[in-house]
Image 1 (cartoon, rainbow, N blue to C red):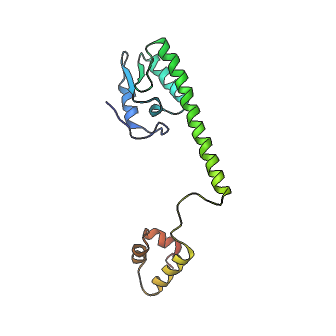
Image 2 (cartoon, helix red, strand yellow; image 1 turned 45 degrees about the vertical axis):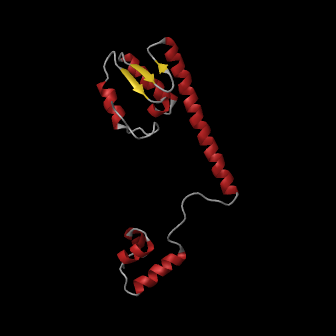
Image 3 (cartoon, rainbow, N blue to C red; image 1 turned 120 degrees about the vertical axis):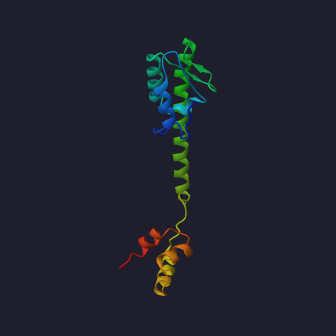
Length: 153
């Protein structure tokens, strides 16, 4: 059994790579869900085609896909297309949501810690003899952040 905790979108997945190296003719690559293997239809089809060329079948437990049968191969192609379409819809909705939020004056990301007021407070602390590390501890940021705003002269 091999396991990866990365998403199907991530190309660096050591568990999958180890499993693929060990597969031999007659083996079956079993995954929990199709979208855990990959998100691109092209990548999924390429991978399953390579497996079939090596005599290895593919089975997705929750999607009921088994490429050892003609119906399973057909279903695999249909499901792959649906997975990619769903991913594209999510991306479209996310982008539309970000645009709508921007139009309402909201911007994404976290709030800045180092506001003008905080930087000025850091300058005053430095002027009274505090070290950059002490300032970082008080403000709750890494000392590198303090050096970014208050470089050593």
